[in-house]
Length: 110
Image (cartoon, rainbow, N blue to C red):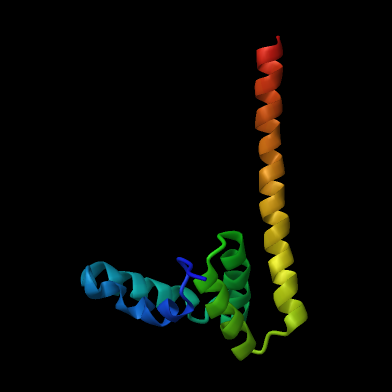
């Protein structure tokens, strides 16, 4: 079965500068700085990235940060809990927009 998602493409991510090196270099410098140890540990940042990967539904990121969190010593329950946090936030964000719909319906019903 063919799909737009090709797991082998993840290994090509570093090649995005082929068509625009200046921007790729700036992105990778920023990306590296963001994931460096700081107020949050690299392990904590990896769990956040895993959760966000699920929220934005990026299969490449899910693959990358599933491996990265394991390498950084995260447990399967920690990883799944991070995914559930993302699901709760995404679900809540969808539901809170229901208030906008309710406001509009009330406005139109008057």
